[in-house]
Image 1 (cartoon, helix red, strand yellow):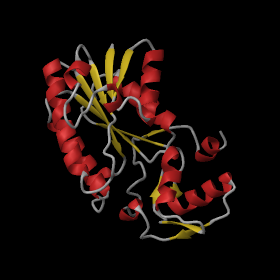
Image 2: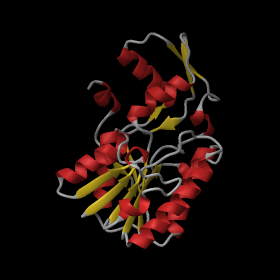
Image 3: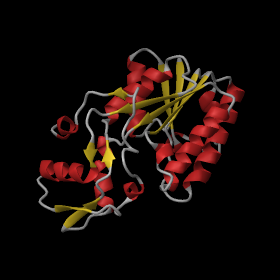
Length: 244
């Protein structure tokens, strides 16, 4: 089948396209670099022509107060174009615990995106993933200097991008879930512990200072970012991924 992957040149999107094409589908990557802009709608009608499925992997440039407007506009444009093109299945990648972190404007915006999809005219599937292994060092960089890395002790259950891509690809070729699938890695860590593991693996001798007010994930508490019952648990561990 023909599958339009919006955000198909990014970390997850490029992997999804590769998996789908390797299994005989016609997965086409779309992004602003290929002339498709979900914010303006430019190129969207052409991208969805003859597509049976559209996968939306786009995200805003920043995780701040502009996020709700981004998702409201992009989902509106996508659903309008998908309905007009007769697309039978819309898939969105979201975040495990998005509805359990009300203190984060970005997480509230992701819930808005989900709600717009659920209320829309196109049969849908939502895949919620935990934080990607590939983003841990970026998260650390937000609250670090040459001497130390400050991280909260919030619990999370990170997952490899390859495992996320496989789950998204599998869902996209199936019957619309009209619901949500959670996916997560096999281990739960405190974020400050993840920081120490990462620094040790990289030969970085900076200290990790536990600071429950530091960074984006300070807004989460308890097990908000940990997958619940019924989640699909991927096999790749963090240390295995670090060792690659």
